[in-house]
Amino acid sequence: MDDKEGPREGRQRGKADFRFEDARLCFAFAGTLADRGTDTPFERLARPEDLSRWAVESGCTVTPPTCTEADLDRARRLREAIQRTGRSLADADPLSLEDIALVNRAAAEPAPVPELAPDTATVRWHGDGVAAVLSMVARDLIALCASDHRTRVRVCGNPDCGVPFVDTSRAGARRWCSMKTCGALVKKRAYRARLHTPADAAR
Image (cartoon, rainbow, N blue to C red; front, side):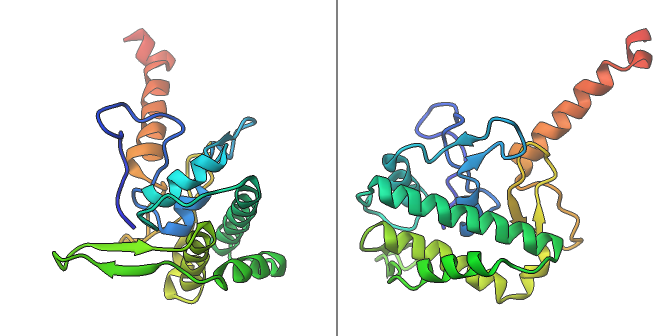
């Protein structure tokens, strides 16, 4: 998956922009619903066109797939199954059989095909529609569950976020889905809170 974190083409990143930095493909997809820990989660997959955009920006395909409302509904249901599975892995709880079945159905679709570019260093993916992209996402979760990294799944320490991530740090002490987003935000809030303590105000 390409690292596409950051503003697109000279503009400040907005709420609707997708996050990919430091994320496995499956959990980057879970992150398309933002602010999960708040009363007003933000839907980044608001329209079929958003799902098509995610498919390209994630690096799953180079051709924007045509997406319907039915595709969008199927994608959101897969996303929530991935979210619940990630939380279960983080909590060392049994996985939901219903979620497993949903992920397996998505993974059963033919996945995109990799193509090595002439520079021999770039890989592009060519798929046949949104089902191929969702298959790639589901297969990434399956690969994670079958690996030793399943014990490294955590839930972001930002209470407003709640998206799972894989802690690949040597110390196993990573707390945020991304230091540049949630980590920076939480530290900024803590800094502002310290500035407003009575002791700091007196100084």
